[in-house]
Length: 450
Image (cartoon, rainbow, N blue to C red):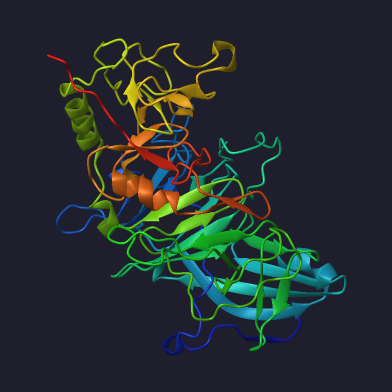
């Protein structure tokens, strides 16, 4: 691209590491997932190098209409056969009418910051052989590696008809050499390899003369305060800029005024980091973290152990059984049900609630007389959401998803973004807002009378 105007080097010398570079992925074949290891670079021991996995909260292991290609509930990021990352190279100050002409070169990655009707700043990017880039967004175009759509939570209010997730929401840059550091940036490059920040977008010139900005609804990130597996505790929600800098949250999601720069925090993803795209929240798990979670085979074994104990309904005395992991949201006749305020497990019955209001309306537990919602129990099927492989002894309230005690305690402490400025703890398996004092309950089973 040839432009008349001042040009200056955008990046500091690599040795200074003053800030992470903005990066981008070129269009590439669909990413490898757990079922497609051939898309990664194979090492000497025949194992592909995995950077980590992204898991969309609220889907419990699979999208409702099935996982297909780049549209799925969980995606593994593998080292690409050939690096496709880019890094900032040259900055141009140009007249705004020249911007469309300047960005017509589809082989050149760039970010355009419109400052006024007569002035724009264009940052050119160049190929980076040391990084792989993965793009996430609502668009189904080929440059998006992970297609994410709005998750219908069970919190309050219906799902909006118009998606609030950006078509090119964010990008993750992974270093191709150990320790394979992954960093997140707001906004992704479109089919013309461009990112546009228009006049109304929050943008600014930094103290060192460079440019930065925020996307319309923002990309929020929360890193865990401690080790996600050993000491799960929520961190603080922050906003990530187009250049990967960290800011305090704006007053509302799309406010014009940016939050305060948080210069002692970074955009480096950790095991347990949460990424919120204003309509869907993603969990980042590292290969080390994934070693602590139960596999589908282990979850099936836990289910069989629960059923082998032959839990019984204390009212009808019939034996209860958790349905198979493949049978989701279809209530079985032997399905265990629970009063979520006390934890007593029963079989399905009409005791204590008005049928026309539905089984989730308040009912009275026959065992302790406590009144509360009465719901079927479901085993959490997405192992990546577990904090350990402990026995499934607890359930989230009020949805009835069952998992380990450590998992329910950890997720019950995490406030997840909702709307423009609200936060609520939610079940990671279905997205339902948690209720009650703790948001979870210990299950009380009655064993067989014989």
